[in-house]
Length: 329
Ligand code: NAI
Image 1 (tube, rainbow, N blue to C red):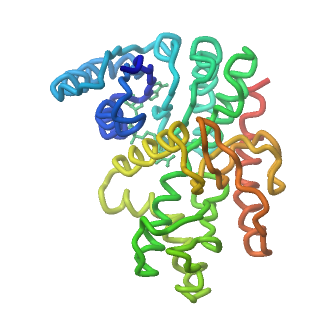
Image 2 (tube, rainbow, N blue to C red):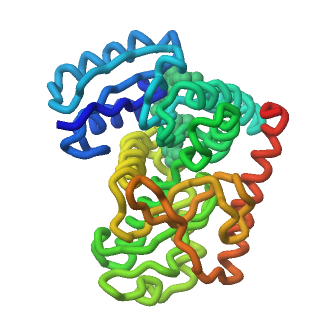
């Protein structure tokens, strides 16, 4: 049988953690033949709650759960991790400005980027879920590069929830099975500015944009619905998306590690300059994955409407980068 893989999860006592950990331990993320060791990080005051989650994990008697640790020390949590899910983040408190949110999180992701850079497995695949996730991933990536061990391309941000939300909206509108939909991409930042681009989506060979045949729906319904879905969930549930966010994190890592067989998924990844997106910015791109490596889908035509949307979400990311520049030195 396979050697266990160490999976670090931060914010382990939180809502997303509670939906995520059980699915990792059951084999849904890395495969039903891959044992895992969970390395759980949370703040000192949350250690008791993490212990409670560990008790429940024990009570599931998962055959693939080969071990668990709980810690408040990032250097311990990320030690030898092959997968790191950075879920814990500082939420926006009352009276906190966007700028404060950015800088408070920048402090967290500076520390965690340094820990990953020094102690994680050199092939560690990092997914940042905690918001603002693109810029948090950018910070962790930049800091980790100082140690020259874990490559920049391994630092990713989560656009997959936006991708899955968009797929569901398209399935409902077109009347096609969600599983039949291929070649969607969500460009840019995980924020209401993201651009869910349905122009290339097919279902059993049919172009879905053609099937829907309603240009106004794209602009007036589809994009706002996907963009504001997070707020709509909060409004309905009184809490932010958690199970769907955990599901998206599972999908992101599953597909990155196990491959997409030529199909596109959206990942927030450091740009290599493709599609005119400045190098290094963590931006949602269409990718295919094979043997644990992702590749950006190239050669897509960008029309004027798409370019405008892609630039708008890029500008937000450039502003966020500007906001944390001083902290990165
Ligand atoms: P939560 O508040 O229920 O849990 C967060 C946990 O992180 C808490 O246990 C907290 O103690 C911990 N934490 C805070 N700072 C930490 C640090 N420095 N190190 C380790 N742990 C730390 O929040 P929830 O609902 O689980 O969401 C977590 C994050 O995920 C939020 O930032 C949220 O905005 C983000 N999110 C991102 C989505 C995406 O699509 N990228 C979707 C939904 C949520």
